[in-house]
Length: 124
Image (cartoon, rainbow, N blue to C red; front, side, top):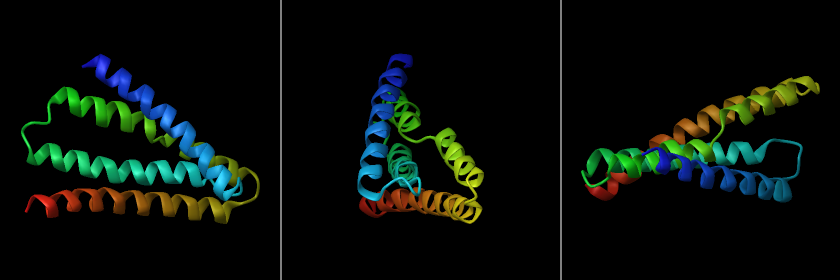
């Protein structure tokens, strides 16, 4: 189980790194789009994975640990989100920091529900 978490976390962290670099290349550095992207996509994926695991008995605890605790734990990041907010607020961009917090929380929660309902729709 620990090996699964370790491997998933490593892959997820590398994917996060490249997703953030790609977002900077596309959208620039003025707003932390990369962290927002990985947190929203990660929330969507956790909705899909956890709903799938709750509906299907063939998702083993090791697979769940690999994908949820490992991969998504490495892919999403609250610490980077928190530091992005700090940087924005510290550079006089408090309004943008507040918008980023609101967008991150709202979109990530929406993504979890969307992922879970997507799986429910396919399994009905």
